[in-house]
Length: 356
Image 1 (cartoon, rainbow, N blue to C red):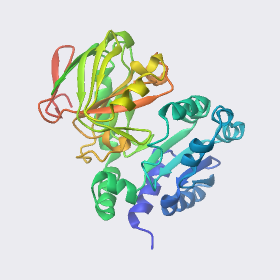
Image 2: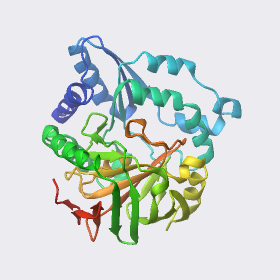
Image 3: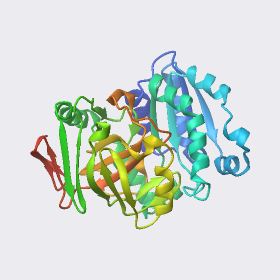
């Protein structure tokens, strides 16, 4: 018997997140462990008279590709996948990795090279389809979070099955403030950083693109970032964990980078291209049902009382001018001794907003 929460979540993804309608071509991309949810999403799409199909990702395939692919294959552009996404109206990704460390020992430059080749496909998916990504409860994710599978299931569903319309109103209220703000000043443990967001456009993450969600994000004026920031939440990228990241910016560019662990990987990613040394995003987490990090960015960046910045590529809709093959969100927890000022006004202290 299917967990009733899976049925509720499938309806949320189909009816709220992607608004599937009659005639939509719906690509459901799923890992094997997410098959029950994938089948329920498939059923819900059929009830809408849409045209869904399921694409299953087999465990280990990515590792095999990066281990054995020649330079020619790394640079091969899959026209068939480009055709597929160009003929897709809705894209729903259901992630449930069997091994979150699968690519941890693969050379980061190899992965970055492949990401760069596939960028037209990912750009089309983001810009031209109604898409949503969800991390389904899996043993590997529960282990990373330090929970039993049952505990992690409760954590995930508690993060997702909430009153999205009420939260959406708060998110849009903050967006309206950000759109009128010039200077942002963040103060916290080993952190004192300023930047401008003047003229940029804030976007709302209210469950339409990611599930769970609960963030407002914008871009920064690229050359305006100055100061230091200490990220006290583990930074996860391409299967690698980097802890205790400290970055120093001067006129928008990272000039010093340190980490308690994973420093070599951090330095390698920063050398990907010119844009990887700059910020492409400034985001604010507002989902207070997510109370702790679980080493998964889809959850961690939404934690109420945190902020995150992304090294690398910015989103066009925020009017970012930063271009890079990477986009790495790294999180700062402000729930203890943290403050945010907008144009000199204190707007958030110890994770709580006084303007919402």
